[in-house]
Image (tube, rainbow, N blue to C red; front, side, top):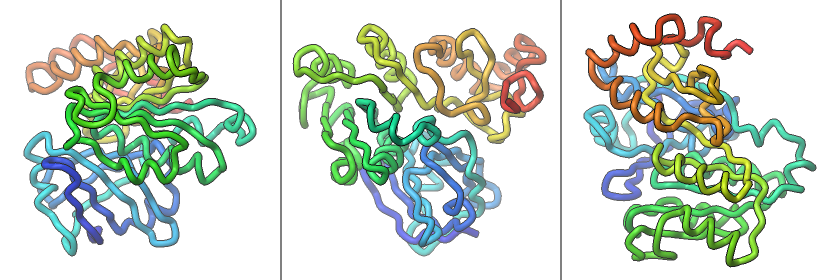
Length: 296
């Protein structure tokens, strides 16, 4: 069992849990995720690690209610325990593998949409801990859905807030703010990390491609087992088959086939759809088998 040391409601349907998970906290890095179960009979839910403390043996998880499993998870509170926390899973952020001197020479911008702000936070914090500045654009439909703004300001050089309805910060989409910063405000970026809803990442990548900014995205397709064997998180990247849970979740955003990923995600939600994909994709339907590149 994994005790919940604190449970916080960030918005009407977004929650933050600080969980005692010493083994995960001892080895996780920004960009990685865990798969949790709230109860012994609950579904397995993949959640990005938003923060961690090796000293305290804790990890922070931020999640949004999108179905029965996350609704059940949200009913837990301080003092309760999660049944399972499995991880860390996936590959760490590419930033963690680059030489610090090389990172210091880069102008880095993060584009965070909605609950995608949570997986952006540990990367921004890690950069600051290594004396590297970055800018962050946080976007949401309305001011009530903005999360982690004050936390982000502790570590980012600049934080730009944008809302679709103009209720806070700049009015418009995150892509408009990025275009304005580069085209009208003299900003120059040579590395972008975009995390948020699939459709947001697609248009963020179209924008950064036009601006000639290399871009990394963190994909969030349906995941079931976290080992690549179920076939749920299969994506096409540069014409090659990859699996987000073992090859990612980060990929070169300019190579991701977002249209295929979004279409496949909808198909996978039904039993009939899963059977169709299994038949259509054949030997490449599953990962962890030599087809996905997860062993490389």
